[in-house]
Length: 255
Image (cartoon, rainbow, N blue to C red; front, side):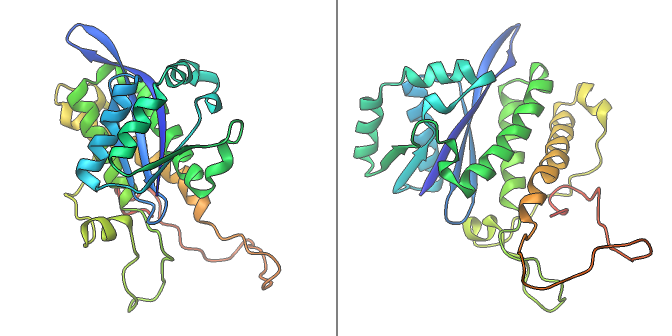
């Protein structure tokens, strides 16, 4: 079962012109894996192509659930209008050919997706803010690379309890289930704001990936906090207590 959502539009460079691009985010509702795609438009064919790319690389989902166009508000008005123009029959025919069931969330019930919506909302919010600030300096190749970096960050996050015991197994991540091994990455290096303006595009992308990492961890970590009530009593922290804080860690190591 897969949740699907859209964000954008944002503008990128194509030669001397500016063109619009949209983001498509797919989330597995079982292992919480994330897959990102870039849509060049919001018409019916572009939607089908994004789903076909997902199927080609990740396999055929049995069920896809997405937001209804009427649920998209505010800054996403343009995207909502495009979704409402979709040829639903054409998309349904494609889904039937692939034996995929497709359902919209009920109108005025964007919360219907539960935990899936929380994850998508946090990712979409942070990635959209990064793109709004930086997209005018990106082209299609840079944008595709940034999305791949963000996807790697998301699929390397913990989905099981982090043990404090040194002899316990490593924490489980979506990449363990997607790749049948932990995600292994080159050291991200150190990048600063000036890298956003240099001619070396790869450094710009790594800087933007770091920006996403820092902002997203502030959005995501509160979701991991346990809020159990009335089980055990523990006193609040007070002046003089010793605590362990690990902050400003390299990308993919902080969670």
